[in-house]
Image (cartoon, rainbow, N blue to C red; front, side, top):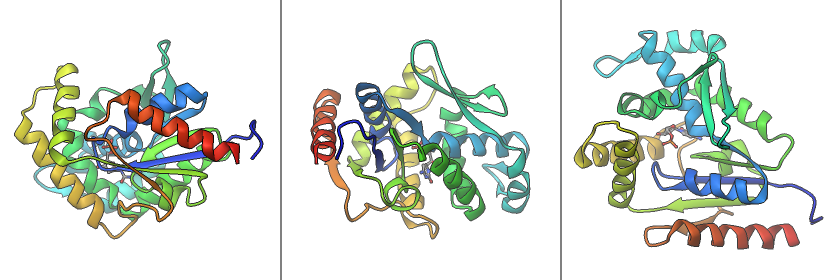
Length: 232
Ligand code: DC
C-alpha cells in the first residue's frame, strides 16, 4: 500500500471499554479525523427526551421519533483545544449527552432500525474520503465492512464501570459505582442481543483486551498495527 494512501480504521467494543480515548489518541497521532458514532446515537436520544418522545417510565415512542428524524441535525465542532463537541441542531450538547439520563435511554433508541439506517448513512458519508478513525459497536461489521483496519476492544464490566464512574465524577455528574455498573451491564445486554446490527466482533478484527494496559501501551499496539497495514 502506498504510504500516502489513507485508510479507514474501525474500532468497536463494549461501552466504556476505553475505545473512544484510544481512537481519539490514535487519530491525533496519525493525523486522521475522529468520529464518535456513539455521540450520534446519544444526540438522537437527547432529542427524544427533550421532545417527550422517550422517558424512563414509558420508554421510546418509536413511530413519532422516526417521523422526527428529518428535523434532527447532528454535527461535530472542533474546539480550540482540538477536542470535538457534538452539536444537536446547532446547540453544543456535549456535556448533556454524557449524563445518566441519556445513557439510560440510548440503547432502546439505538435498536430502532430507521434511527440506525439514518446514522449509518451519515457515518458512511464521513468515511468517504478515508483518513478516518470511527468508534462504535457496528463500525467494522455494518458501517465499514471493508475497513482496512478493524479493532475490537474488550474489557471486563467492573473495569469499565470504574472508568466510567471516574469520567462522570470528573465531569461533576453525580452517580454511584453500583448505578454505573448496572447501566454498563444493561447496555452490554441490549447492544449485543438486539436484532439490528448487534455488537459483535468482525471476523477480521484484531482483539485488544485492555484490562491491564495503560493508554500509552494500547496506543503503541494500535500504531504498530496501523504501520503494518499501511506498509503492505
Ligand atoms: O459508545 P457510547 O457508549 O457512547 O454509545 C452509546 C450507545 O449508542 C450505546 O449504548 C449503543 C449505541 N451505539 C450503537 O448502537 N452503535 C454505534 N455504532 C455506537 C453506539
